[in-house]
Length: 291
Picture 1 (cartoon, rainbow, N blue to C red):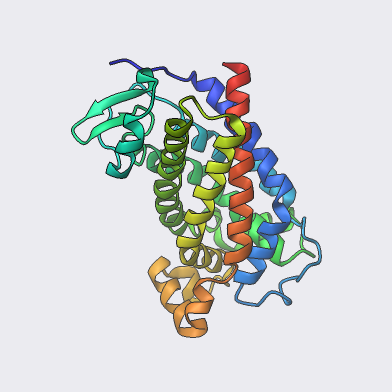
Picture 2: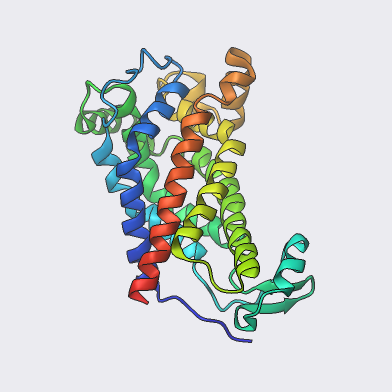
């Protein structure tokens, strides 16, 4: 049973534009989150001053991540492998058989089945591109008096190129579970809404589904995000800088308790919920316009 396939360049254009819009518009929330997660504390990291410090660096990293997410979430012709049983009653009420396929577990949307596997490889590629940008951006957010160029040259001089990839594995450790949660939730919510309405969801509805899915995923994975931030911001001579994500989690738990593991969870959830709504809504709109 064949399905529709989204052209690669369409996904790149839609994902890139959507990612850039979200990152620039919601950058102050990201800055607040980063400063709350910093070991130096919110006020010593800048408080509410200079909330757009590092926005240029962030904008440069928006397109590779946006295109990776969009390609992971685009419709494919791959054979479905699985479908959450909870969706089956609603899916059986769906009127459009073109979008559905039978699997060993029952009726399932083509672009929902197996989606948890695709974001993993996509985000690995995006992380390789974005991690150096994230290192410079977060250090700029917490040390706003220092320019991004100075941070870049100093990191290269003291640590070499490998210093720009500090936090690579912790970033992947955060992004993989986040994307595995977010994208299937987004597709499941759209599928349920489609089944109830009897017709495809509108872009604004796809956006709302993306916002809810992103917010839930952000809250669950917040401890991993705190660990990633601490590793990237740590002095190069400390245990935090050279340890892995488990070491970072233990250090944070020992020093700040459970509260420390959920530092910045409110702005992170707000940022990703609003960002998810805008990203997936605008992505769906752009895909509709250029397809």
